[in-house]
Length: 225
Image (cartoon, rainbow, N blue to C red):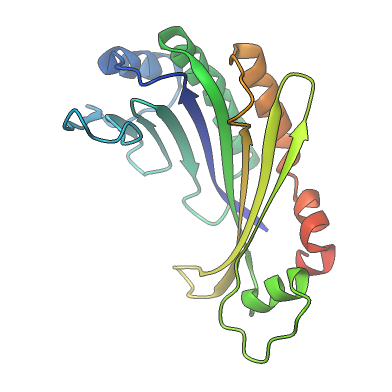
């Protein structure tokens, strides 16, 4: 399996009109990445959905980007080959800590999320999904997609742990792939005041839960290895 993209999301406590120029300056100062300058500021009408980004920072090679909207901020790191290296993953979580400090100093944060996008090359991804999750045998199955979400409670917060399985095509080789999306997020209906400590604990938990052994438990090891 190959982890090719990570995304961390901060959901703000309310619809917040932030000082985007100040945020951009702070991000440039506190993260080691050299983002394209100037940042992209996006003028939007007052009634535009609050989830639409108002400012974006992007690396020249598209390996990382940050989007900040009225309601949330997102940080993406993507592989430029086939898989994120351990050094890139380590740098991602280090940058999450730095960006978190900046956002917490500017606004309240009420929820957190992390999404990992993973793929596995296989000749028949639809059949892999069917064998793992479907009891019925289909003679000519063309599409299959499964989403599973578990709820867990730990010491400081409640979180959802999601798995989505789908089929896709690897663009550079046109080979079929099994696409796996892991989505961990703090529960919407459980009130939570996000602090640096909670972000640290959530990030550490996420790193552990992204281990492939949990995908094996859901699908069965025979369909993952």
